[in-house]
Image (cartoon, rainbow, N blue to C red; front, top):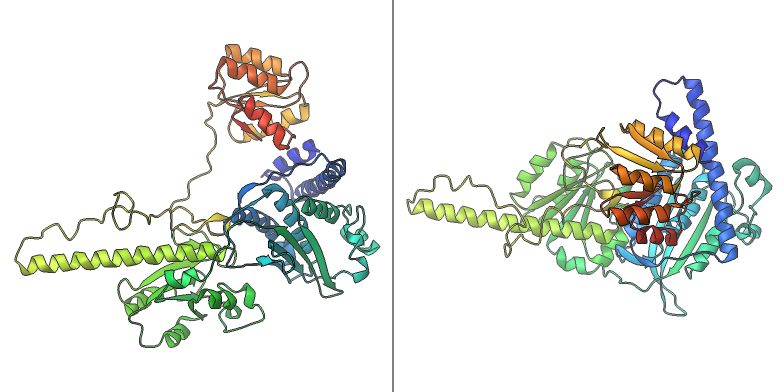
Amino acid sequence: LNCIVGLSSLLLDSDDMSDANMDSIKMIHSSADLLAGVVNDVLDYAKLESGHFEVDIRSIDLQSTVDAVVLSISNKVMEKNVKVRTNYCGMLPRMINTDSRRLQQILYNLLGNAGKFSRDGTFIDFSIRLVTDTSSGQNKIRFAVKDYGKGIDKSDFESIFRPFSQASKETQTIYGGTGLGLSITSKLINKLGGTISVDSELGKYAEFVVELPYDGDIIDPSVYKQKLRNTTIVILDQNEKFTSTYSMEDEFMPLCPTLVKVAGLSVIRSSKWLELKEKLGLDVGGKHYVFLVNQDLEEMNAIEHMKTRLGEGNSSWFTFGSKPTGNIRHFKSLTGIFPSILLDTISEAVAFDYAKRDRDANKSKKLSSLRSSNIAVEGIADKPLMKLGTQKGSCDAAITSSTLKPVSSESTPLPEKKSPVKCPPKSTKVLYAEDNLVNQKVLERVLKRLGVSDITIVDNGLKAVQLCETNKYDCIFMDMQMPVMDGLEACERIMARDPKEKVVFVTAHALSDFKERADAAGAFDFV
């Protein structure tokens, strides 16, 4: 399986292959992925049944955790013209305590199923909420996944969670699969102390709801009423569904009306610049405006006109959209980012711009005073402003460019100049200890494609230790299990001789205890 996946992925990058051969390679690669999924399902189920299963609860970045899954599923369903709509409640914090890997596995299974059964041209609705159990008073975090496909008969609600069981023979014939996905998902949720439920109407939709215990912080959206007092947020988006006063897609609008009401925000939505002028009216003084402008909106040159109309320093500007931009104030999506993170970013930008405006105003007053006193001011007016955050005690010290960067894959700003992909220097010297011939070939070809040609391959740990006594390597890739001497013992001996060596384990062992043992042996990294 390693051979099929590894070598076919390398062939997919080839430029000198006919269309027919490329189609064959794509089928081989997709079939290998499917087979890998089946193997992983069976192994996961076996671990769960045998009790050899680990839950690693720790503080995780929830935004990044769900972003990775949503992005992966969005790419998979693109060919069906299916889109994933996200809605995150305003009380969600960025950090929570859970098992990130298991949560991603749960969400990937549910969103993957939703994509599989969705009709072409429809949506997958994915939402996250903080709720309180009315009977126990316990807080819970609720994940809901809804697709608009064939639906599930109510008589099958229980059977779909049984191992090797699917809703119907038709499902197995048309869509394939092992029938283990929901069974594994259910067991994972149970291990995390949660529950899963399903609701559906045949021919219309199916919705799965997961609830996990939650004992972390809860964001109070009303705090933004004070942070953004005297501030109006203006959303400019050509999608009229998202700029109307109310629509069926209410909860999937950027800064949805429900959140706006709870947080006490002032929000104006518009799809055209001309329409916006009418909504703003003639009296625009005394307020600060935060503009969130879709980068695909026509008449982008109208921004300068609007800045002039509002007056210097009375507005803050952000763009959003999927296209690369050098603007540090840019979001890839307004609905894909947690409201608390979005509003914190906006609040910091407003504070930053207020401080800059006040500083500029004071500077102008000083210059006017100097001029009226007939004191020479040559060169003063053109001095650049101090770089933010470089002087302790300055009014801007807490507001640096880094705090204004939108977070995560949904909103990470691109640098002004895209730097090229970094490859190892051609002089890089690599040692690879691996007893499997297929794995040797795959990694060797990957390294050569990256420009590394000085590669030495051995088939056991003892040979690696002996070579390290007389040779210096920039990187040592190490398998975990090998004959004569395993990777852990070899790593320990190499590091005992020279602690500066960089040993990277490349292994199928994914359990955390193997990683801990690799760290204990002195490994530089674990892949």
